Image 1 (tube, each protein chain N blue to C red):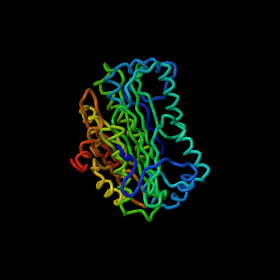
Image 2: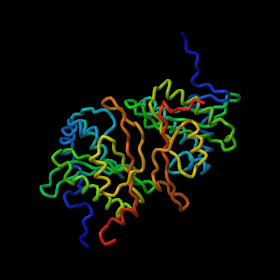
Image 3: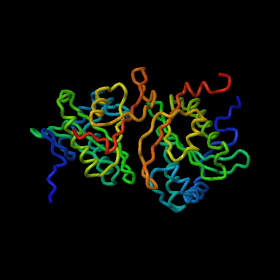
Length: 187
Length: 188
């Protein structure tokens, strides 16, 4: 018996490691877009220079080495262009739990179905290869597209951190969506 | 104005003395019931030396990244536990609080709830946060009741977040908003 499954190859995208030569300039550009930063997380929004992005990558790979997180870039197969990233944080190996985050950085590349390909692939990796029991994705309530995207794969709302976000003078709830391995909809 | 910010009815929050705390913590950690309420990671037993190194390093940070307090009884100034505040300085107006009562004879007598009330006063009247968050495990109903008494509301359960003793356990996320806390204050 053999295993032929490719973990990192989708139809038009692939997951891969960081490219220290090319990626910092691309991601630096993304960080100048406030809507990108706000979608990606709750961290203080600030633009990063390519050198700062490179430092961040080094910290990420150190975290991977220490088995605290997993980070992959998302690339278009056709021209190898960097489209975004997907990562696991807060990995509790003992309990098989982790926090999931993904983003397509280039605004004009959104809505082309890359995200679904990526998540389909990555859930196989998380559940069939890492043997995790559950995943958590945290999103703002003002990102309904993101919420319905995750729900498509079986994620359900578990926690609503009331008014945990304050942006432009308005508060928003932070939603935590959970997916258990046996609820995963492979499609 | 002789207002006491760090004093409750049973306990006060005080500075951490590295010598004292690094002797207490390894002893508390031997109590598995305590340790498992405190941390999702499997218990690891560390020497006083190692624990003191961590405490020293943590207290050396200026400005402090996390705020770390000891909990002392008012009656006899005994060290009975600690409290930590994580991510308190961000732009979000939210922070995560953690509490550990290492001395078992002080469980279920209102000491933890009193310490949490002191923390809420500090968080809302001094740090000016908008809300406060905590995580408590399903197998700690005493903790959940105490936090509810202090005003925290259950905001959801992360299902099966932990595997222990042959079954899965949920994580309860609890939160309190500044306005909810204000309504609980006397004279409101």
